[in-house]
Image (cartoon, rainbow, N blue to C red; front, side):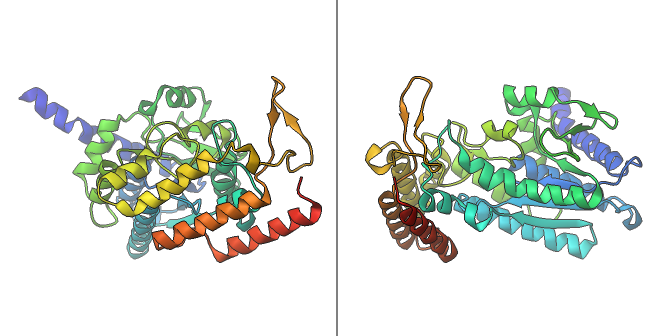
Length: 372
């Protein structure tokens, strides 16, 4: 019995330790750089925001001087249920922070209008992403999020990115965490790709079970519970695609595991997350799975690809095999037509009119220059 009680309360002591450490780091007198929390809406990043919220509520108002930014990235092709949950929780965090006088700003990043998934794929003809050519991660995730962090660095001389990464996630994640050089009392590490940015990983030593224990034990400090999040994981049988800030983080985006991410992701063989939602009764998403599977299927249809790349050159692999260029304009028109048909059946917006206008301008430019 004593052993069972100890196990039950282990996570309580660990959670208290994390809050205490976070308290010390927030009040660090060596610097007052703003915190930017990479918030994906998944279990780990939710736990980090939960911890920061609790820590700030325990401080006197006069001590809450360091600004905290809860930053989430919207690729504009996020899994519908996930982005709905993310926006709902972000709004609750923002409203509660304002009412409680906490120095928390909730911000959303999106790709530039000419760098969205549909503009690049349908407008410029980029082939559907795969493991060897994940052009989507850089344009949709890394650049928008890095842009926000760089603005904070420029304004404050530096910024601290607070991430919910954990050693328990995978062997590659453990190696990535352990190889970084530590500074400022061994809590912060330099960001490899963003000068002036540091990384703080408060929950890196927590196990997956401990994360779920805390989320299941304590209500969300901004109101309500974490039951919706827990149900999302149950329905999808998956995990979140985390905030991506560098190419070193790319393996975590579009892995073969079941993860919440872009519903258009053709890097994975099957979208187990969306399939999980359909299996749990949300049949409206089956039309999205059909479109995504078709998009993956036509990627290597040579009759739909140009011979030259967009730079006008022909490419070959190391073995001498020809590497085709972008989708032809004819193929791009076909993809847009099918996307609009899917949108009509789905009953909600999948592509904006602004994107369609940019797409058509891309077609006109390519046809004017002479499609190869």
